[in-house]
Structure formats: structure tokens, C-alpha cells
Length: 126
Image (cartoon, rainbow, N blue to C red; front, side, top):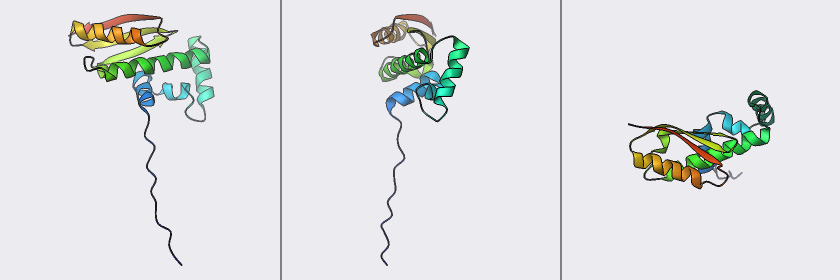
């Protein structure tokens, strides 16, 4: 009786978008985009609490992930120091920047993302 060769499966690696989504939106982001069995329930609960439709919540979460991904790719912006919140297409940048140039670049990058209606800059230079 011959034994079958043992093959190991590599664990799936999260894509950059999912990583950015998790960083940008915390734990609720995964539920909002449909990861997990209770995603529909989670989106419904979030919808009831925020007054936004489940579709609007998902759109805002995706937009936040895209903005965060742009910030993280930039050599000028320290993206981990900037929180990105989105409400109905309006992006709120919160956190600390090291220079005015970093703030301007973060705002420029956020505005460049398709679907962003407006950017509110709440960044503090330290």
C-alpha cells in the first residue's frame, strides 16, 4: 500500500484591499462587505443604527478602504497615522501629520479616489 504524498495548502493571504479595509474601518468593515455568515444581519443592524441603507454603508466602507490604500502607498504620507472615515461619500481625515506637505498630499490623494464627493481635513501637524 503506497502512501499518498502529503501536500500542504498555503493559507490564503488577504488582498491589499481587504487589509486596507480592515485598517480603515475596524472590525465592522468585514461584515459590511459580506465576509462571514452574519454579514447581512450586521449590515442591517448598522443600517438601523446609522440611518443609512446597507448599500450606503457598504459604499462608504469600500470608499474608506480605497482612500486608506492610497494613503498607505504614498511615500510622503504616513498612512498608519491617519484615520479615514466616510459618510455618504464625504471623507474625513483625522490624525496627526508631520508636515504641511503630508497634509496636502493626504488631501490630494483622498480627492483623487473615484466616488469621493468631498474631503474634510481634520489633520493636525506636529
